[in-house]
Length: 131
Image (cartoon, rainbow, N blue to C red):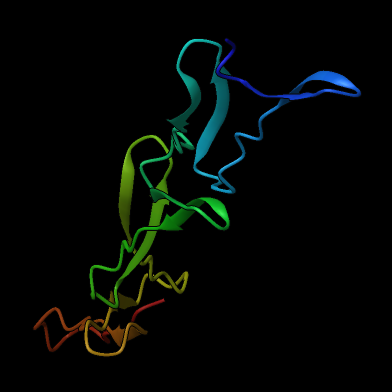
């Protein structure tokens, strides 16, 4: 016999070989039928080729690609994820365009601070200024 058919015989209409339904309603499997073994269910691979996601499968909805967290909790970095190399942490760039300030990122607020630079050359005969 064929393990992929449901075989019945009716004295009036004769033999019937109806295909069996191997659908397990699980979106995480590929369903097939082997004539010798019957229904087979092979797990699918959920892989989006990104190191920025955790790849899983839910029977009712299929593949799920959940973004990983790249949060380093540092307010002076911009956190992102590259699909090939993973988490990246880029320093916040603080530059107001003035050579007369010291530009820094405040780690407590994540905001840029621009402090006036001390232009004192300790020479009483000069007028100190920053342009």
